[in-house]
Length: 95
Image 1: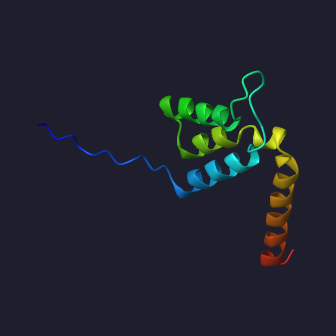
Image 2: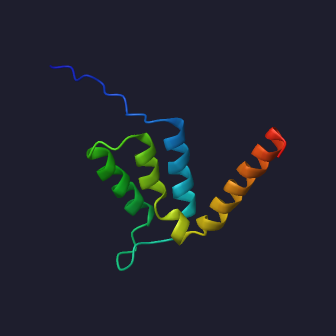
């Protein structure tokens, strides 16, 4: 009987995990046109292809989130985040 080495799942980063959870929530009510497959399968596929072609962590995260901005109202959320960062810098630096 041969013993198989146990493989630990690849862990990219907490940010990747967070982006995956966010993309899953953002696309939770969407399905692929014509097939009814949950839309998150598409973004998982894109991220998998990116990683297979040596994407780094930020690129893999971008692959997960590439449709959130245009399909899920993420543009407004992105503006809110950027606005919050600008306001934080202004308070921090006094300008």
